[in-house]
Length: 133
Image (cartoon, rainbow, N blue to C red):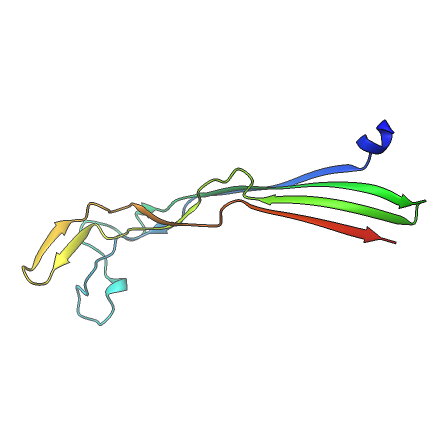
């Protein structure tokens, strides 16, 4: 009985760790009048000088094989956890250091500059059963 309970377990995991990508500080207006405000960099900030948030996730899998009928039929129970430690992996952040007011024609410091605005997937759990014969 003890052998049936303790035998047939498997544990596996995938650890993913990445440094943040480099970004450039952007403007909220079209500074050079080319029709594209997303390609304009703010003065005083070089290209790719801001490092974005990194990523770290741990995916775990636990499974148990149970023989149902002799050696020919096996039931495998599987439990999986993606981002098992539920780490907040930020995907976007505010890249605009100064806001431009078109009425007053003044740039003012943006208090939300470099604040994180979006995250990737939270912890996801999944279970499965598989019969092999």
